[in-house]
Length: 454
Image (cartoon, one colour):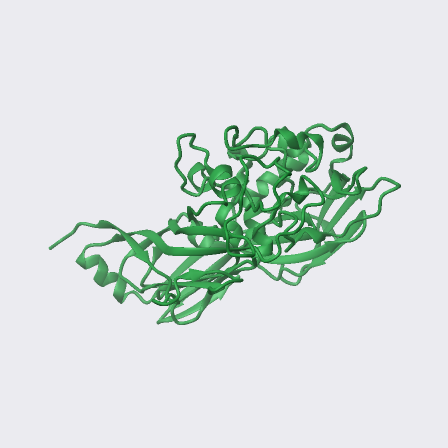
């Protein structure tokens, strides 16, 4: 009897792909959603190896390709289009739904691209960060997926939901197969021009992007004949994984208080980021930017940081997990590293004792997005992953539990107070806060039925 196990790479095309329709695009001549189905098989799947592979093309309103120059700093050309250089093609995914083939929902993450804006620069491996791109400099992300949108480029991106990113392999038979649905973000979210560097640029209204040649790939392990038989007979089991629930709020003052009902039993962390509300779905700005609160500079452009004074996290009125405010007032006023805030922020995303991030340095932390330091940004000949990046990577977050199952927010109110300070002669610009509740789900399988506990 065969007692060996073998590794196999599975590849799947979208199930909503037809011979007449091979393009996915939210705006022009394509489908806005992409659906992959992974069949029920007696084998295990290694979720961390799952990748969405394809080709991305960018077009101006006439259907022609943009005429990007060699750097971000050419303000003589109106026909320039860029994607976010940090998260690349992940910027195109608005929502992700993971279900089994019977329709039970395992995970549903909204505003996935805004979640990636925090996770990818601070949490992912080098290969994930560059989306699988391999060029002679080994740091092809800014070059191939931001600056060079004037040419089609290939991408290979993971799905960062904990259903796939957990340590345990996935029993493909027990979960009854999988259906993964990606909803693409609108083009005016994904694409932007040079206006944020050179105010006055005309918006490239009508510009759009396309995905094509899509393939989902994942590594699996096939047990021996006896193992396959046992997998098909097994009708009960438990699976635990982390996933995200998304929340949205608008900050309208420098003393902002928000409350949410998470209603999750095992909350492990809260992760969030900010952006001026007027920048979202706007061709003139990068909708995946993660600045801190911004105020107008001398040119009446949102180009200066508002001082962030303190953050307070509470559970039903009690400060949790810290019984003190996360104070940034002194460090912000002095223009120095905000160590305590960085500690809590990074620990919400990854183990703080294993900090391995790409885009968090003094240059990214202390920058103003429209200050004179913009002249030191990358070009096609000179770029780096951790240096000379003057786009702020500012996150909000706190970790509740790294070792156990998290804390119980069922019937408990989550509260966050954000204290900032505005110059006396500046008005407050509304800012959007995207907040993600990381929590542990438990799947209980029994006799062909599945129950999801969150």
